[in-house]
Length: 90
Image (cartoon, rainbow, N blue to C red; front, side):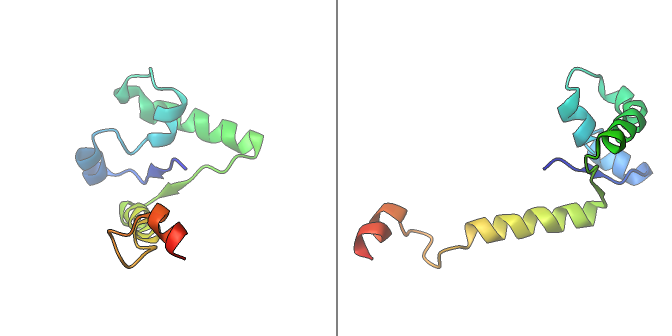
């Protein structure tokens, strides 16, 4: 579920190289300054193998993460409800 964040001067400054998550997770030993160079190679290889290469804007990525956390975290109305207790109480 890794995704890259669309690059630009502000994003580069704010993210400090973390916008290249796909390349970082595939090749964790590559130094951060070389990740932009690696992006083209990884993107091309993904295309050859038919693997989806996901890149979103920062706002799209944040929306996706927050939506997922809300979906997982708000499943029950009672934040103190224990799944074990609910199982036996019905």
